[in-house]
Length: 274
Image (cartoon, rainbow, N blue to C red; front, side, top):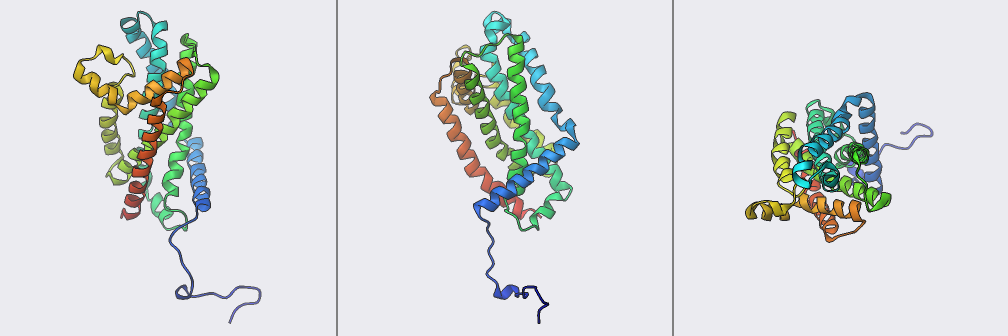
């Protein structure tokens, strides 16, 4: 017996159920969760302190400390420094993704998301998508500081925009690694500790701040195959000369591989988390 104007209740055993969502629903759920992340940033703007002050401080500090020793003066060092400091700053910022994810999971927020009829990947991909705003802010500030200090990108404004997008895309891909750490780690502090232990050797043992030709042979070999070096070179070629080099395609391929590997691993670990 059913009420007038309402559909009958069909038992679960008689319904066709599915445990997957369409691509359209997945994207919609992801953007909804990304909006949640933006609301969090709006209500707690102190989350942006690292992407507002760090680019300014690092650019000034590295330029005036290393400029004279490496390039003779600050002006000649800026074309080499700005792309390097951009990659290092934005990728380091992606560590916060895993830290905040771990904090949200500790608060029980993601337990509620797991019970909702939404795409399994949406709470994770939405949080990572919202963090691209942080990357965009850091990218903009690094270039603005460079211009204020006298940096003039030879590639033009369009090439600068493309190089910034490249860094943001690659940082978003790398953030999946830290999201995985955020899911499997026990505390937010351990996520930050593990991530920094991985990132600092990769960023400093690269061509971000010094030419690899000045390094010992064994260290130069590592710096030349370092993925960070490929990304820095791609950004330099774009921003300084407007050239699309092979390093750009290597960086994009690496980003795609990271997402293909770590996105499923992160979602699986997230769904199995007690």
